[in-house]
Image 1 (tube, one colour):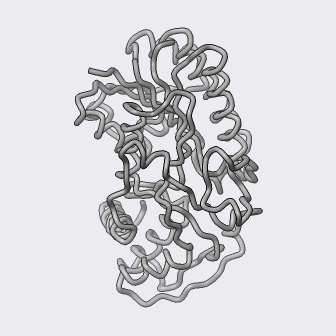
Image 2 (image 1 turned 30 degrees about the vertical axis):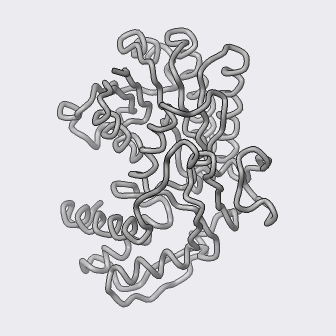
Image 3 (image 1 turned 45 degrees about the vertical axis):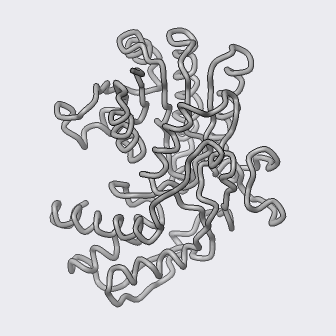
Amino acid sequence: MKKVMITGITGMIGKHLASVLQKEGCEVAGISRATSSSRYNTKKLPFKHYAGDILDHKFLKKVWQDWQPDLVYHLAAQAYNGESWLAEDTTYALNITGSRNVFETCLELSPKARIIPACSSAEYGFVPDHLIPIQEDNTPLHPITPYGVSKASMEMMARQFHLNYGMDVVLPRLFIHVGPDHPPVTALQNFARQLASIKLGIQEPVMKVGNLSSSRDFVDVRDGVNALWILAQKGKSGEVYNQCTGKAWSIQESLDMLIEISGIDVEVQTDPELFRLSDEKVLLGDPAKLYELGWKPTIPFRQTLTDIYNNWLKRLEDSNGQA
């Protein structure tokens, strides 16, 4: 039985991953900041929980000494590409310095553990058309956002620990993972929240949107965590794996599908405030390396969008429109 540590365990990916690991017979513990874990009753969480910050090296050492993991998923981060423009200092601190603290703690206290840090498709940045779909080993990293830069730095650092200290590191580059219970800080969540608000009479039937022309390879988080478990078992140490589906949906297509799912008539208005300083036109990955390990996505994109929309209906109803 593996003893697993998940940093950022109360985030969207962390919660789903913990559930999968427990079904596989793993003992699971996790870290989240007090501000994150406050959304949950930690006394009822189905895993051992440590409240603290990855920027606190002393805290990490105490946790590692107590739990002694042999598998570490490092998910804790400032995880939102768009938000990184508004929180550059936080993004660099958590994603680079915080990650270094995690790797240093692993090196000192669990040097034989397999480490799987959540890398990102945002590391690719602008990709020429002839390199799409993106392959891991022949596409240079040209990140264009603070978030992308921070994730590229984290990945390079993880590889350095692998090459210099022989640490067992597998590097999944996660394309955009989507699903229920996510804050409204990404386009799909923002659309679904607005539509649910309109459906419930909380908002006038007018939607504010940003850039609809970009296309993204979306992964349902419930499929994504299965990939992370497969990588723990079969991933090759030191290798990079695109965690993606091989299918890109435009933001316009995604919005149209969500409106159809909601069954309501709305007016869509473009809001310049929702545009980013720069935005990748297409992020479409080649999942061949991950497919070779036996993983494939199973949840249709329309089902993902339906679940996100219904989740927002429930969240808004449960909170009287304040979610």
